[in-house]
Structure formats: C-alpha cells, structure tokens
Amino acid sequence: MTKTDKILPMQSRRVIFIVFPKFEMLDMSGPGSVFTAVNGLLEEDVYEAVAVSADGGLVRSWSGFEVNTACCADVTPAKQDTVLAVGGVEDVIAAACGNEVLMSWLRKASKNAARVGSVCTGAFLLGSAGIVGKRRVATHWRAADMLADLYGDAEVDSGSIYVNDGNLWTSAGVTSGIDMALAMVEGDHGPDIKARVAKMLVVYAHRPGNQNQFSDVLSAQMASAGRFSDLVDWVLSNLNRQLRVEDLAIQAGMSERTFVRKFRAHMGQTPGRFLEIARIERAKTLLQAGAAVKAVAYAVGFRSEAGFRTAFENRLGISPSLYQEMHAR
Image (cartoon, rainbow, N blue to C red; front, side, top):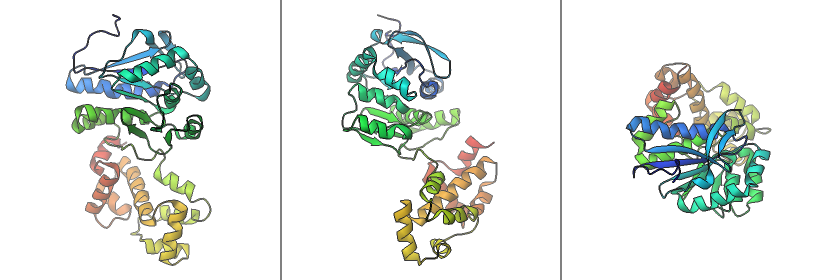
C-alpha cells in the first residue's frame, strides 16, 4: 500500500488531479482551494487533494511552479473519490493525450471513481481516453470547436461555465473550475457549506453552470456589430433613465412590434432581457465601487430599491448587499 493509498475515514473523499508537464496551475489550485477550505470550515479532513502524473515526482506547470505528484500507477480511486484532468495549451494537451500510460490509467480510474471530470481543456484528455462518448461536456470557448471536431459524438456546450452529465463533470476556461468545485461541494455537504466556502474565498456564492462564459454585456456588444451597435451604445450611455422597450424602438426608428422581432432575431434575446442584463452589469460595477444599494438602484434605472434587489438576486443568486460585501474595493 502506498502513502497515497492510505486508509482514510469513510467520510473522506480524495480529489485526484491529473497533471502533466506545463499544465495550467490554476486549473488545479482553484478547485483544490475550494475542497481544502471545506476541511477548514468543518474542522475535519473530508477531502484530500492528490496530484498524479504518468511517472510521479516533480512536474513543472506552465507558470513555472512545480508540484510533487504520485505515480498514477500507485493510485487507485475509491468509489467516493473524484478524478479531474486539468488543462493546458494545445501542444501540451496533445502530448498528454498521446501518453498511453496516462490514458490507460484514466480509463480505469473513470470506472471506479464517484465523479470524473475536467477543468478547461482537460476535456480533451477525457475524450482521448474514450470517456466522453455522446455525453454533454464543456471546455474553454476557444477550444470548443476543436473538441467537437475530434469527438463528434459529444454534445459540446461552448457557452456554459460548467456541465454536469451524470457522474461526468466538465468546466470551461480556468477559473470556472472553482464554480464547478463549489457545485460539487454543495452536492456533498449542502448549500450552506458551499456559500460559506465561497465567501471565504471571495468568489460568487452561486454562479450556475448554465451562466455564460462571457460578460453578458460584452456578448451583446459583439452580437450587435452592425445593425444594432449604435443602439446598444446608446442604451449603455442612458442606463440611469427608466428606459422602456418603446424607447429603444423609437431610438432604432422602428415600430415597437417590428423592433422586438428584429432585435430578438439579431441579438438572440428580447430587448427587455437585454435592458435588465445591462442594468445588472452596471450595478455590479457601482457596488464594487462602494455605492449605496439604494443609490445604485436608481442609477441603473430601476423604479424602486425592492425591484432592483429582486432582479439582482434572480440574476446572480445573491443579494446586492452580499455581492458588495464580497467584492467592494
């Protein structure tokens, strides 16, 4: 029995990170911090973070930091464990996928562990090991098309920050691994522990998996290129007004009915939804700057503080006050 395979208390779960030369450190350290924070809160080692590689020993990350790893052949996941493949840039991932020792271990590990998954481009390791199949997966938006081309049976979600399909967990770029880890913690220990961990790490208490990888306003600005670009800029410059869809239609020089139809067709969302998203995004900036919640509500065009609080919490899953507490400069 190796040191890594020591007998742990029944409630303990190992989180086994698969690493390789020039891996992305944040893909491991972000989720790792989430799981170890739970240990601190519960004052008990309910998670153990373990790094494995093909040969064991020190493995240098892309950023230059080295991680001491166990040889994967010496580690056998138990039924309560989680196995996560981290990501890296294209040539680094290609080399890892071509390492048959790592791929063989990953295939066997996926059959034993409670959860198997990836952070960012680590999804390619799952695909190369034959684990993905026809299931739904996420990865960094820049790698989504390539993942879909290589593993055509998979349903690649290029928008969501993480995806849970049965025991398969996959996340988008880099920091979204933290969101995925928080969701795992919620499943293991409930929403209260998840929220306390998020607050401790000063991250969103709840950022659901289907939330878009991009800033919603940035996505709107990109989508609006051409036909509605001037209108989007005008809206963002007038968010302090109590704008209505009718006001946007007038600014666009169309009847309201025609405007709603064309805006939705071009932008992929209704004008009303875009207005609310733009207001919430601006509100986040003002809250971070320390503005009072009531002042923020009126500064972004809400008729009442109560309406603003409801819209903000529906959108982000936390109150404006808690958001400010977590993010104030």
